[in-house]
Length: 192
Image 1 (spheres, rainbow, N blue to C red):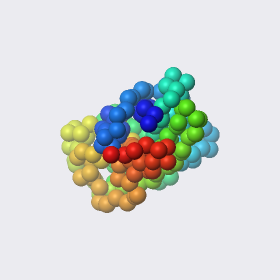
Image 2: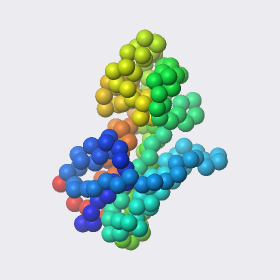
Image 3: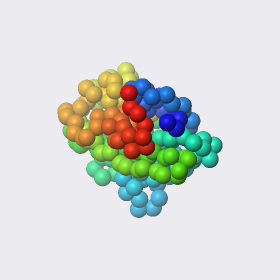
Image 4: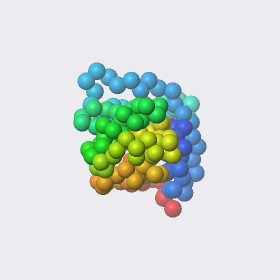
């Protein structure tokens, strides 16, 4: 089996990948994540996932490189990571009682053959109606400023959900493991 490389510095993606009990290393690619003019959210995450994998191909020949990228969309508009308390509060107030769509792009590049599998896994979160006090209490406890949509689904953020729908709950955290297993199996990787 070719060694696995996760093209990410995300602790969330690292934790998810470790669930497969496969050895892997991590390296963070340096790519421009600016959306192209008129680029859809799905096209953006697929392109960025592949770009992340390809960015490491020359320095990691003979690897299976996993790239992933995620965006959240509310009312058809991409919402990114808030980075600040104020922006997170705005995002959560805007999402209150609404549906937030998450699109997670996934790429698996065989840097030896150049073969690259690319896909996008959607996931939808139906938010509870949230008041300002609850949002502020949540943000002070969780501080989800590095998370698209301003919540950590793997933590207290789940308390903000009314319901969820999608083919793979791990895609909400940023690495769709069910689809990744399909890709790894197609590359001949033995999953324990």
